[in-house]
Image: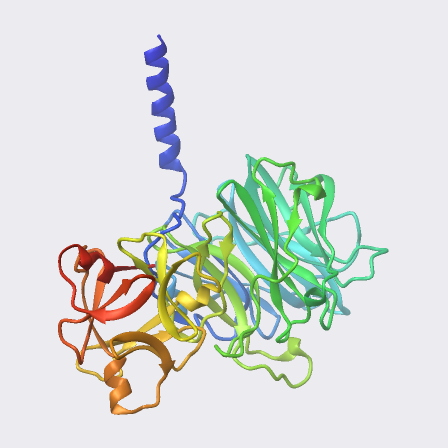
Length: 476
């Protein structure tokens, strides 16, 4: 009897495992995307559906419509045809400032949440919902389900939804009477349909830190990712210029999420402007997964310049961008920095020291675990500076600096465009010497010498036997 019960439980668990999406592990293969993904699209939301498509919707600069595109790959969204699925009203409600649409598939129907003002009061921003019962959101009709009501008839926007422990929640940003902020974050259970809330409304956070109150006192754009027994809620803070950034709230997956004390707030932002990489005001994010299901992908907008003429809301050039989200050994997310435009970077994990990565520190190449900052261990693999089929590794947080060898020691240094530098910074990409699943990098101008680690430092040396493992890396 006991044996049959164990077998039955095992069978049920196997079925459940098949239904659940694959969860990214700490070590996941590299992703290869090119940024920006889409120009002039802000507040991006990407939803991966069971039909094999990624669906992208975002704010358009004219603030007058809701657009949708899809592709079977994330990069394919760049060139995918875009369809307008709904336009603003010509009078009254839902007539202005059409902002931050999010698309979700709930109970076999499509829903789009968005914010809108009135034609006669464009700043009377409230939250609304559209519904489409068609299996294909590009067909059928979108029905207006009206305003999402909350306890206060005040400025409200950025509705998002998630399910935890079988309960569907709505999270959003709103101005609460009696609190002198532009918007705070709130959470409530959803009601009998996906455009109503029910029960207790919990205030999750109020912007108080300096980085939350630059220009405006803002907490908005909430988005949730669940991993490692915890629920992580990102949000955007401050004005929508170069001060815009991401904050983070964290709760245990088993906690009562409607208890404000269940949520811990990061004292510092987790994703900010980076002048070195030319990325300003990263924010209003969402999350999706890579095509192989093994990597979490951060979706967000930013600009590639700091200075804006006039009101930032009138500047059309926020772009949709994507990059890999990494995870620390303690199970918390590591957002890193907004990477440069162009090809996304990779990390090189050691084959034999499986929790250690190639990084630079004081411009010297090293191998270390728990690299901080993360970007010290991120490199773009680009066409070799010396050509002839070689590759070069460009530092992510020091663009224009490359991995190069000098006196058989490896450094990260600025490209001086000399023939010597170009040669020293070019490598032949080989199948991993210790594992074909990895790669090895042979110095183009020092045949037989490979990038390898020894005693925590990086060299180019000839390797054989068991030492080949120290010259083999896995791209993440």
